[in-house]
Picture 1 (cartoon, rainbow, N blue to C red):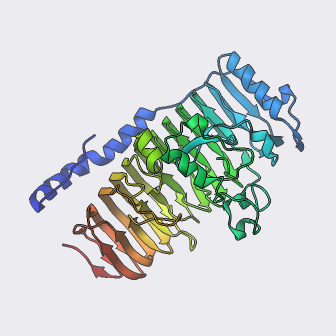
Picture 2 (tube, helix red, strand yellow):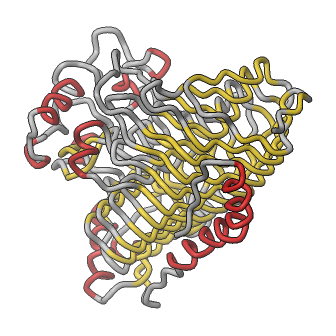
Length: 463
């Protein structure tokens, strides 16, 4: 890929012209490389394997048997017909498309024992053995979840959510929760001590919520058309996966940490035509937390987000906070973002325990109706678990916004907090119009921003 960094005005002008010709063609090349994921024509209807569509009968065996038969036949489509199907976790295998017909709804059981034994998964950027994700695949190729049906995690104030520890999500004082010593503090200590992942055993007796859909070490993944709701935790999580397409998906889930789509340690990812209405970030690109991220050391890269609509959420397109292995080559175009409950449009969050880098981010043709805090927020002092200071100074460079219109910019137009030791560099705004921001700019430890045809609150910021 061709990415240009500039040190003076003459170089900047020349490289700007070159960038016009190359940057967005690189986004197209990423999409082309992901390609089309296809499956054999064979059909395996879960009703033929004993599934009962009454929303009460447990259909775990029917799903498992249909997937096993499909796999043994060389792959195909496992079909979920109209109706409500209660089940435990679903484990996908290579060359299988789990297809939900219109009118179908998969209800994931509230019986937590169904998600055991513990599997190799992750929690907030840290690998561990924990409750199985509701839909899970490890080490598989050519897998899909498609159709017009609903995937209902059945998480609520009585199931999964209280473990986050917040009263508004049903936690009762004195009840166990994720910050208790035997949960996150123990996992943090294991990572500091270099405990192997297979010995980081949680699950039963612990309170770390499972992911909704996770692909771990998978290649060629398609998530298309379905609707996710009532998630325990992060919704769509490609982890150490490549050639991933998320197309036409709706995430309508307002629980704690209900991020819509979180590619992590993943490359060649295309997120398109999706609707996000979430309790956390709509899209958050990640690459591991602290020591675990540095151990794995796989950057997330070559990611295209386009034609998506973001409503409620902590951020529209976000990089971090689990970002210790770095993120690069992110392209965002033709999206809308609008909600009084959308905190930021574009967000980068890290700190000196996370460290990591973010480079080569290109955002264009975005319509923002309303955000609460900032249009662009870059924060290298992010922290929600107490003091988050360490020795890993993050690097943030080459962040470009073009053709952005914002009707209500919230508290800040731009909110950038870099580090004195390593200021943010290469911020460029072109054809950006931000209206009604309470404070146009709050910028600390950032090299001069390149403004081209940019106004904030009708003030021209051009060079």
